[in-house]
Image (cartoon, helix red, strand yellow):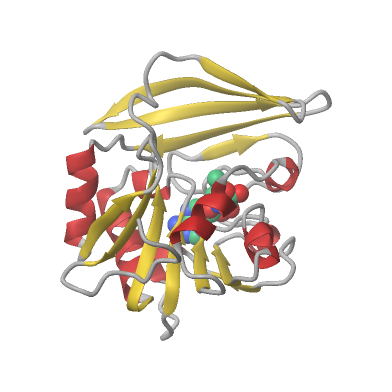
Length: 240
Ligand SMILES: C[S@@+](CC[C@H](N)C(=O)[O-])C[C@H]1O[C@@H](n2cnc3c(N)ncnc32)[C@H](O)[C@@H]1O
């Protein structure tokens, strides 16, 4: 499918590549990590979830298995075609306006680090626009120093190596990041633009979209629960 690449984003390797350089076949192979546990601990059981940038459903499927009702959004129909058990919507997140609201909106995969500040703000406004009263936005941000001490690699127990090769400054505080995924039978690469955000910069970006941090959910500060500024807090499954 001839989707336009986002400027500064590209990918290589077998199969379809999305506008932001992600490989469909790669994401179909990647195992799910701790994401479903983090989500399940942070939101009420059975919540309705709007998952933005769902890919092939790596996390979606685990959430559906846990009893959440998920609406999965991605701009790649080839990614969405792999999703089972969830409603899918093919759209850029920036333009999404479903006229519906959800208990939980998820913006994972470091999408909040979009180098283009207007894109980042449009992503966050989409999160805020789809929140039910008392609902929350779950955001995954990069860990501190993620762009430093490169190259850095991790060997996954399932048998592949992921390597963050480089993060080259492109001016104005953003970097061009190059990542490789090496499997015994195939290699994929992705190059994307990412803007590192300090905690203050991250919280200011949320504030511009009318959101505020309710809690940092993980010790490394990478998963965040936020809510509408001035709104009521989101109901929790257990007190914390
Ligand atoms: C790195 S992949 C992660 C997929 C999934 N969240 C996961 O963790 O397996 C990012 C996905 O977000 C989608 N995406 C990135 N930017 C987007 C945007 N602005 N609008 C819609 N989809 C987007 C890509 O097409 C891709 O499928």
